[in-house]
Length: 465
Image 1: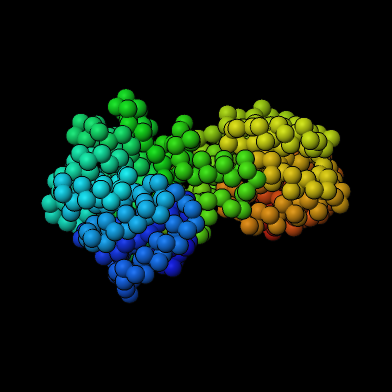
Image 2 (image 1 turned 45 degrees about the vertical axis):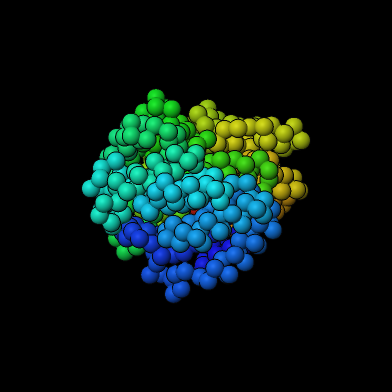
């Protein structure tokens, strides 16, 4: 949307319209990623807000999220914005709120204006921890009362526990609490502290993913027993942190799959994370990489990637059996229309195309097909293949990391080390990610692989013996 989120540098909020009514807030969360102190003008004039709203309505989008700060601080303005959006044809209007200011009368006003759903920050099942994370004494009970008020007037409520270090062992208990105290709530969006805003100054607020790798699956098991749907939002967790068995409930996985199936890898909504995340060493061997954006830079830097491990191993198909989570389309003598059709039908996270050469136009066809990984198996490569590899590299430069087409090359015969070095140098210039030396390795091969990696920055791998 071309609303306040874009004017304020939030271009990554593109999965749905986001309009910030005000940046002022009645809470003081230590992890807030859009703190009021970052804004010279916390609350814009209402006329400006309405202009942005009208631009959104004119776009024809059907879902609008009203956020802050805390939008309920401006009661009349909030109701006016909701009513104007609904009158303009917006079908769904969601309120992001801490709910502490809501009572029966306020909730009724919002519903009468046209509010359809609410996204409420109930930060913990423990009153003291909730108030500590909200920075407001008494916030827990007031939040629960606000949630009750919304539910009583028919508003659909999704809860947002922002998992922090102090609550990382309480996720399963949180689910049980919701089932008992708020049985009308059926959706939890399991976000976690992200290292932005205030949390950038205190990265220790981030949860340890090693703890959540154990906690999240138990929370999901209990949620299923209670009939509660738990979702993994963009600001949630990497796929390997408890979500490997449920990728269809992760926003990144859903959008990556949609982008690949539509051939729109450069325009994947929500996945262009403005460079905030990256894949680290464990991600290289993960079959879920194409459905996951990785972890925050600060998580790798502060916690050293604690808890991040490949739950499904990515195995290049050079004579090995593909692991779970992978599909291999073998086209040893070149890719044909039937091969691209099979690539497009494949639904597993990692989809390999295995071939010995590329023809003109194959780079574009692979990009449209949904292929995630290309395996080339040959001793030498012709000019067409090298040109297509360069085309893939150029295309990859415009994609989020999880949507890049990774390229692995298998060399069954090396010849001399001098010849092998020249070939690998050429492959590195063409953007190849990894080279597999398909030989019975000895100490000379190990030294060669290490030297080439240091010199060229390309992975050179040997068979495990």
